[in-house]
Length: 159
Image (cartoon, rainbow, N blue to C red):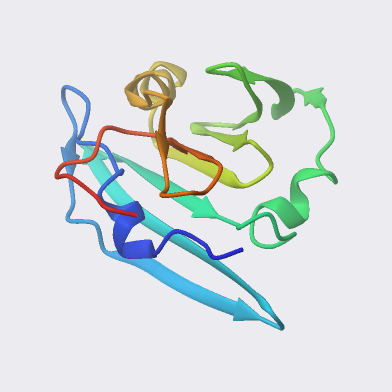
């Protein structure tokens, strides 16, 4: 299985929600481990003293990147924050909060793609604003299983 190239994933990183500014997509990489390949692309956003990061990973069904820690996550709640399992767009997710103002979520899609969103120095409503920008539509890679797209591409992307 070949991962979607990180340059193709970059096109799926969203524009900033209202009140935020988006940096140019600067993160992207392709990794090869033994016979497996996986890719990711990321973008950072800013608002006053807050910043956010969105990362999209294609594991190509290998146990790499965020998928390596997925099964080891556990739900908990304390006076300092929480980790809890849930759903986002119908897909399994984990959300966390750490005092005073650190929020994030991982969304696993079809055991292949992972979307990670983190907000530092912001609020839960900031995390929700980024999560709501995600529009999980399905596209098809030529003659391959359906590939979910996490954000509308800025330009047409051929995978």
